[in-house]
Image 1 (tube, rainbow, N blue to C red):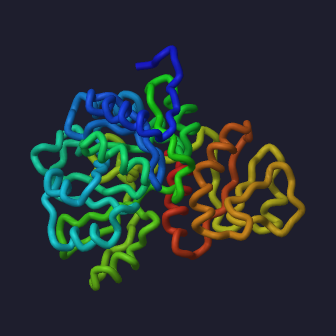
Image 2 (cartoon, helix red, strand yellow):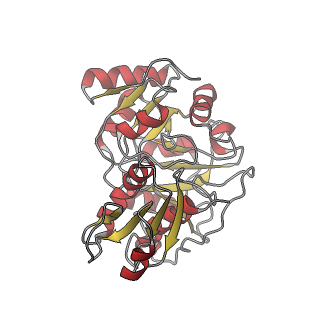
Length: 333
């Protein structure tokens, strides 16, 4: 439902948190900050509240939601855990790791796309953790944007996209990581699989568990099919501007693009900088590049360029996650 008024952005004062917690208990929507991206939160155990998420985003109900909890003790209410999942939770929660586990009956089918599994994590963002504790609810919270568009990493991003469809945005500043959480399927402890790459890598998970964790294997989900986890569609995180990917952007390659195209390099190129040349991080630091990726894409999408020519990340700890987002953003299928 579209409103004639624009959503209000709230500071994280005790009074505001109490008010927003009350809104969530009443089944309303609140956009919230996390360390990954901003999420659109509702009471995860209230199907009517969760349906408001799908309507506001234009999100298909075949795409499940991630449930955010405040404390590890809440996990057993949401999901059927196992020792492997608990080891990962103890090592990485609060943090950008989402676990896929068999769901408990209390979780509405709407939240899980009708599947018998559920995605759950404990976020690290201090302000969201205060809100989770105050409202006393597990919160379903996909990215707070129109479905399929570039994920929001600031409160202003949320308001620019959903400002007339929601009323409340909690401002927690720019997201520290800037990419969605790593999603790991731990339903079967003997067959652990990374479903979506993020800041926590398969190598880290393997080192924590002392066993091999299957790394991310791109297997795009087909629209209309129920998905095990969010973020699996071949086209996602997409700007409206056409986008083309390049393994590297040499000086000669950049020179061939006209000024009607935006050129998004991974690091600052060693050439005279034109007005249409941009980069994710001047020195190519991967954490900083990941942090700025969605913000850069949103900025370039608003500039009226004919196309975005984007360079992929070179090998590094976050390259898989950055390049996954770039591939899906550029896919036109």
